[in-house]
Image 1 (cartoon, rainbow, N blue to C red):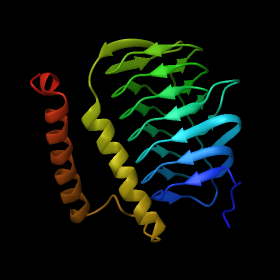
Image 2: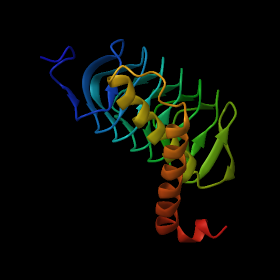
Image 3: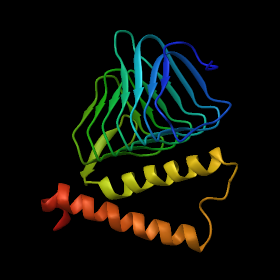
Image 4: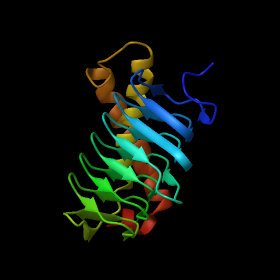
Length: 199
């Protein structure tokens, strides 16, 4: 029996650290990873963490009042960030210590900078770079490649941690893997976003 409650669904995640706390109605997607002291709570509504997303050390994810929290596929929630009743798209990076509040919507392929504060109801278009407190869109940039590569690094690291290996980001085999993975992601980027790939 799972050490989490009956409404927690783990759909073949890469790694769930033993210190992770999951309470309420939560779905963790395939290949996702949850790191040291991450907390996800859903006393009402629901939290969904998409495939190959990662919730890093000391991050906090909570529902809002009447609002689900949804984390898109291949999205990274960096160390110490807080996401509260928000929807975050695919291939996003929420930086270290950032706070994303109730009703926020973050478009695909975006970056929220370290320490940013997105106040209630902030809507961020796809391909945005957001910084500051309150957070504002400072420029437009499709960060698909960098953000997806970061997510796949965490997927690889999660698989390694599950086998007791804590040095998966070191050595010539790792460097070759990163180069090959970047090339694969860049091909996918060019196919999905041909206009952006010409820039």
